[in-house]
Structures are given as C-alpha cells and as structure tokens.
Image 1 (tube, rainbow, N blue to C red):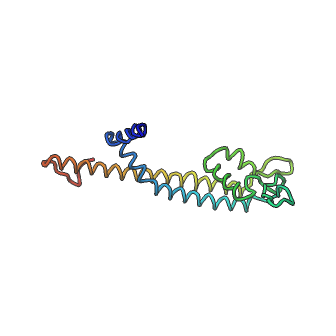
Image 2: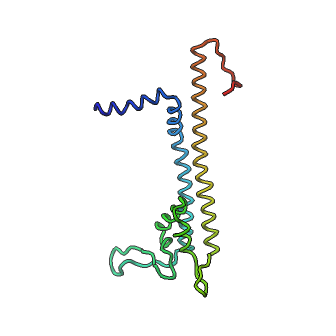
Image 3: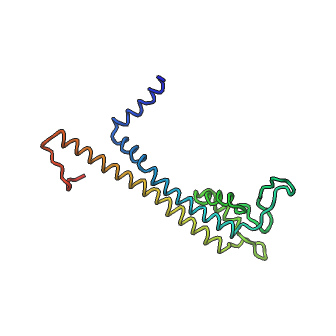
Length: 183
C-alpha cells in the first residue's frame, strides 16, 4: 500500500508540469479517434489479404490426410504461395508489408515467375497490388493516424491556453481577454 502511494507521486507531477499535463490529456483524448483510424487500417488490410489469397494463394494442402483435425497448410509446390495460402497467413503477410519489414525480399519476391531461361520475372499484377497497398496503408492511413494525434494535441493545447487566460483574467480584473489576442 505504501509503495503504491509512492507511484502516485508521479501523477502529482502532472499537475505541476503543465506542458506534460497537456501532452497526457491530448493522448487520452485521441484514444478513440486513433482506434477508429486503426480499425480503418485493419479493414483495408483484411480486404487486401482476401484479395491476395484469391490472386496469389493457389492450392492448399492438408497436414495429415485422414486425421480428424486436419489443418490447412500452404503448399510449397508450383501452384501455391506460402505467404498467401490462407487468410490468416495472408493477413500476417499484409501486416508485414504495411510495416515495411522485409516485404520486398520475402513476400514480393515470392510472387515472381520464371521465364523459359529461368530468370525471375516481375508479375505486373503483383507489382500493382503491392504498390497500391503500400500507398494506401503505409502512406495514407498511417498519416491519418498522425493527423488525428496532431489535431487532438492542438485542440487540447488551445483549451489549456484558454483555461490559462480565464484563470489570469479571474486573478487580475484589469486583464481583458479578447478573441484576437496573440497566442
């Protein structure tokens, strides 16, 4: 119990440091809008994952035929891509693409085809698919999350400045708050 009281001293620090209090208030105010942005990102990722299963998935194989709990596994043959054999692996692969974690060397290269000589050929459908996903997910939607955070921070900062002006006007009756006052 006493140690928990010591931890709560950090909470009292928020009252003393106004700028830190504004940042924490902005973070708390932005939880729901950021969660909505991440839901939108998840929805786009699920749509692209289901498209990837249909475009790149190929056939699926069973772990052990005859078992009651046969799980679907990706085929490593010519007809299937192990990253997109089923929805769950495709969703994980698309999340990897969104984060930029070795997606070009692992996931994108697995969609290449070989020509008659054995050289790797870029699949144009794969190129359009991955470039469009990177533009939508990594560039647009991640920047929406940043914009939401910035908007909530500026709104919270404006409210804090307004509260400070009201407190100053309350303490000093000669202080007049105008709409056009400089920040």
